[in-house]
Image (cartoon, rainbow, N blue to C red; front, side):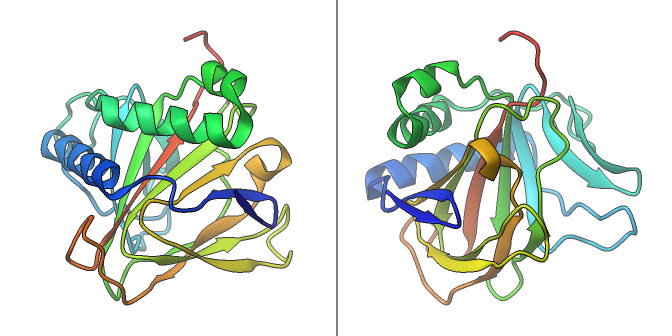
Length: 212
């Protein structure tokens, strides 16, 4: 396990067979809850497509950033997360923080981002829309490699740039849970996980403080 500005990086944590299962799980979610291109509160579109699985889904539109129970286009509840995703997240938390932390982590939102070649990017931000900020945030990286921005507690803090490859995982816990982070760009790489130069990321969070 490596660290970048306190972010825990699990390099090549998932083998190719597991990556294929995770990509298939993402496509399963997108079949039921199609990808959308959200917009920022000022109307500018994101440079990434999104969908969700789980009890809650993260959204952004002219009304602001928030969690919602249903897909904004179909009106249907977000689909349940496929077991492959839940198993992968539990493995990553156990490897980074220990079995006890994994047993205590009860995620409610599986946000799936799809980054297209030459376009995908996610600016520096912090995850502030969750009422429960005690549990970790876990991101699984699949497909094309990307330049991850690992920042600090303030936007002006030094940012470390590290390459995330297919099969890597990032765990944010403790003070790093509130650190700035983002995706600067995709790297011109092909991965058998997606084979079209795109990247999928699955970011998993606990949203509220209610008992599981």
